[in-house]
Image (cartoon, rainbow, N blue to C red; front, side):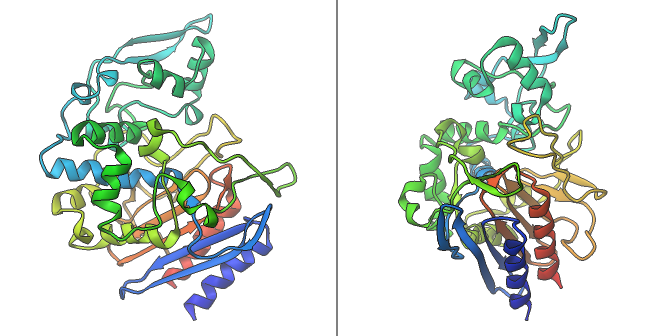
Length: 377
């Protein structure tokens, strides 16, 4: 009965124009899984969507990269609180953006504290995305170039002193660079060997071409509220850690099950698992995003009114959400409107995937909430 109800939710969402196509997967407390699909792969591809179709999962990558870094912490290869500049010289001596003078020129100073792996994983390093930081966007407008050009040219600017705020950004990309420096492997090779293959995640990879026949089309909402074909984001090894993976909803569920399992699915030791689940002390408003580029994302304020913090891998709610996830649940999403949660208290996890911009689409978020309510009901 629940499966029919969830399928009906997805079908109704397609009829209402929420997305061209959707997939979903649920890990139930009894150990069973269920999977769903509705709609088509895209406005230019009328192939019916299948539950194992492949999506660019964007920032859903971040939790897997965080897990990779925490494996190395557990093995004693990395230290959560050591300055990452010791291994990543580009992050050793950064400037902090303090504001702008009367002429609009940016004012910067040297950072007083080093960035650590802990601050990277909790988004408290000061490393921001310019599309979620109006100040950073203004900075690059003043000095020229862009955030991504600065990564190739020697180093980004920080939006605040490390550990003095929460700002979503490239911290997990930097954690991926750290995994590479510490392991001697590329991030794709490390993640494949130590997380994906051991968990049987055969549909998850940084290279979409191997699964091109099952790729959902990328879209953007047009002026009428409908959908137009959009260019797929090009693969960029510098940004693999924060958003490089392609996957399916059922395959990503295998990783979420590992996070829920007491044995970490055989890939996460007790320390790594505890770090992924436990709240960290963070300043600011973890999980809340204010857009600086509306075509990419709307503002995002998940679970309004519910206290939230950040673990070393996820946003975590600190109170039960009525009719939904329990306190201590772990969640996040991806730029093209993919969303997931994992609830250790209930043993339940779920993922809903679409493939369009901008992120935090209101109709998509409403469908995600309805889907989650159906899972718990």
